[in-house]
Length: 636
Ligand code: ADP
Ligand code: MG
Image 1 (tube, protein in one colour):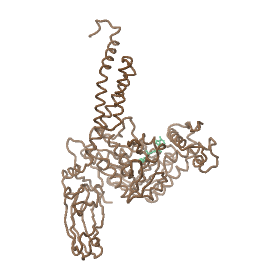
Image 2 (cartoon, helix red, strand yellow):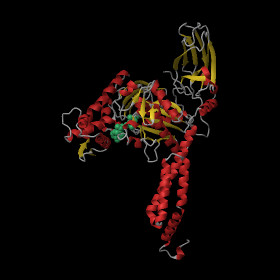
Image 3 (cartoon, helix red, strand yellow):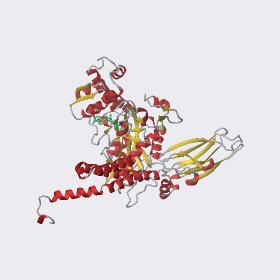
Image 4 (cartoon, protein in one colour):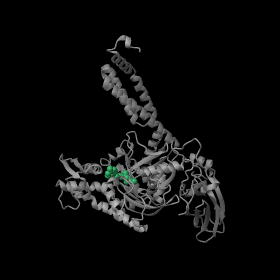
């Protein structure tokens, strides 16, 4: 890949205005959002101080969509409408999706599978957008303003359809994608392997359900992925399953020599689906605690009221999961072979993914490479942190003198005018260059012998709203009936951002072409303005923000009033208390119904309704403060 200097049109820094840009790790199991604040990258937490958002979306029977831990809790009670690991289905057709043996009601649809839920058929893009929207709101709450854009990470092996699907999800969530960044590259950036460091290094990423290995080469500031490998069905979940299997054998619930203890226990009715879930949750907890402690107690209550209670040592855990660790090493060796690299010649080893906290994993990797991997940055957070650093840079917040080199991207989509003044995008915004794409078009009228080709740049759907870059004609098409000609139009952007467009009628072989310089065709302000106008979701975003603010206010008042009632409820007579309870209930209900205006009314009514109560509490507090003090002390 060519070495290119950064030139991000439309993203030049404004002197005193920092643009808020975040990095998002959209994971299979967990997702995170991070930002650089006062020069320090940090992962942003939700109101309960949780950084990891489980990548789970649930479509509730009350019409509510929940995301994260709350949704994960519904995975068993409402599996059809609760989607986990949606990342596996991004940009994938029915056949691919089915390979994951997931129980969803899949619907075949062109391009990408859809999942049938009570809220209608959902595409993986829409489901992922819910996760991204949640993270975007979290970031806007934490940072106190609207976001300028986001860098979203994707696995290095993601193909164009999967990347495009990720970008579409972001757009749906009202996020401007500054760039899609490979997960291993993000991890390398977090470790500062971009500045100064040269050579190859390996990223070992063991997540919840997937294992990815990438070898990156860094030369003069440009990352190149030179080999990738992995196992899309190997991750922390498998370690959990080993613990459950062990517990079933150990307690004698299934025979010692049963090859599939979980399947057998479910088939025999020894375990219900709920029991299995309880055991899985406990296994995960036990596994995670064994990363710190040498022993833990595995304890799960079954629906039969019997309790499974067993001590589990780290040694035992290592033994029952040793083959899983060995499998990861086999993959690593293969990737090293593909990269024509020996373990000894590999530079730094970067550990990514929550499951790399397992001590046996670290030991095995250390042994293979003969030196310790990098683990200083929390392995669940390292990808989000690297993405945040990259986002900060792309937003133009880089300090003077910091001249990172990065591969360039296309700032705005390139496309063609089609009938009705509509734009057909050929190369989407943010594609890294060099890039080439082709698409076929046809004639509109019978006997049409020429085709006017109009090249445009922009994000909008109408030609009138986009920028015209070039026009040329393809002449000499033999007369055919409308729709019979097959004109293949190819767009090619070279490493310098030079666009050339060529058209060729496939049947007759007639050709024509033109060269354009897209990057320099538009000024920074123009690009910014075009992006601004494409923020279709802006109003919706503002509404969501207003709602969230009202909800926070309602929560605050609800809690304060409940605490006051608990402390000083005796200050109210029966009737007053009942009135206050009614107001509390109303506010609670309004908070649940997603309408900012009705929440505001309820909050105002509650505030008014508590005035007398507040006055009495004040009197009591003053009374307490004054009692026991002499009159001459008061007023000092
Ligand atoms: P993904 O990249 O697939 O979204 P993560 O990187 O968040 O996933 O990894 C999730 C996995 O990491 C889970 O299986 C979880 O149990 C595991 N994990 C998290 N913390 C620990 C820990 N302290 N010890 C062992 N495993 C852990
Ligand atoms: Mg991950």
